[in-house]
Length: 152
Image 1 (cartoon, helix red, strand yellow):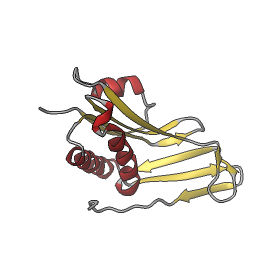
Image 2: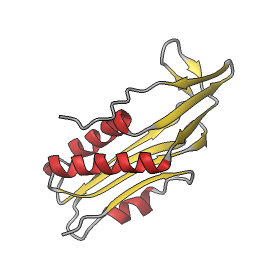
Image 3: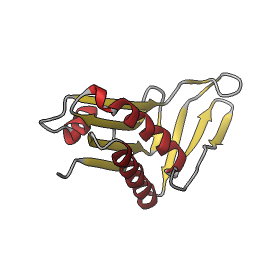
Image 4: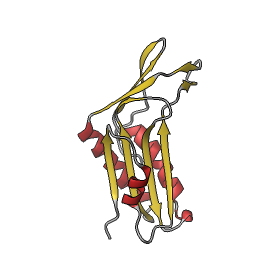
């Protein structure tokens, strides 16, 4: 059986209901969803205000790496039915969702929580997305922990 997978880099607003509908099967009884959001106050270092974030990505490479993340999830958790991995790009303001990772499965005890957690952690490791933080005192590109190889 072919399970649904949604992988996307977009400048459009994330529609949780539409994405969830796209990865839910008649056999799905559980969904684990992680959504990252823009903070208005960032505690990295000394707490400071964030006016907005600007996200950039090279879409073909980012979506290829998202496929790698989805493949790794399916290999580790074969009970996962649907997977959605969506990253926003562009200028995003506080309280705005920036990323969504969701997994569906027949039941909550099938590893669906772990799969979604793995998905966001792995996305942060290998999907090339760049983030600039803009605040009242200037702007700064935020470095991540990019590891572009398969996890062992």
